[in-house]
Image (tube, rainbow, N blue to C red; front, side):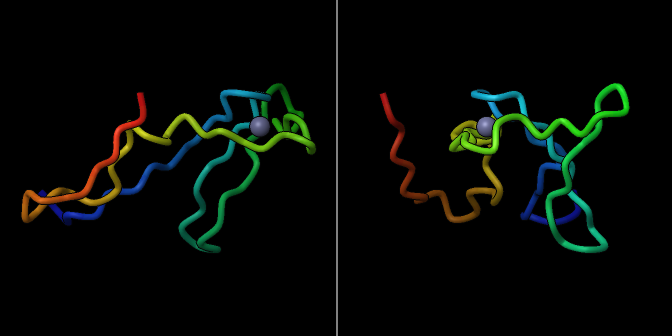
Length: 71
Ligand SMILES: [Zn+2]
């Protein structure tokens, strides 16, 4: 147990396949490379990251988090 705040280090767009890795040094997401090509995906995509919804960045410390689960 380190910190109640957890961060993902990779995210993948479920729409266009864009892959990004978290860079702790620049504190930004960087586009990952696949087969020596950047996995940019579609520049017109409204990216829907696979860490949405299921990923909880902060532990529910006090137990009353207002989670609005979409059906
Ligand atoms: Zn996308």
